Length: 213
Figure: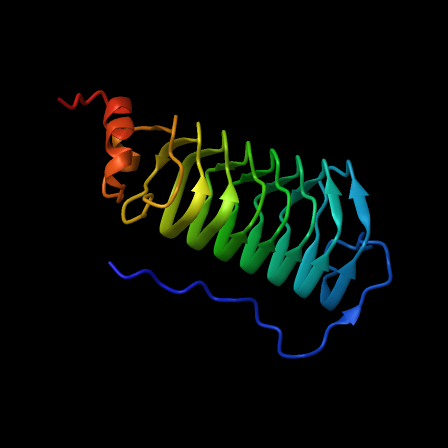
């Protein structure tokens, strides 16, 4: 089955520099058509933010909890999102480029046309989310957990999945052959229909309780 292309963020105009704290004053306020650079917000809980057609560079989001937030046509580049949590949020045509997402949580969140490239996302947690047209490339997801997700067109290209866990997250049609799956934990329902390399067969069969002579 041919994979669909991941739609890129749409940026048709030049983006103005955003010179204010990244804390909208009202629940309905959004930040649009802006470049957001070299700042930090930390340890903010229950925070709602809306970014529409933005580029975020060298920004540190540390230990923040985002609720009902929206990220549309937005690029995160060289950003820190370690231990952040996104709950009931939306990501549409979003790219994470060379970012840190260590221990980051996505919960009950929609991710559509999302690219994670060269990200350090060990201990990443994606639970009860909808993933449609999502690609992860040249990245580390050691000890990551994907739990009870609805997945449509998921692409993994050269990803370190050592000791990652997949449960109720179907990898049907997903090519794992370029990724490191050593120690991966996955049930039959989730691995069914995936493509693996011959060198991965022994480990995959072993975790499913199948012996190879």
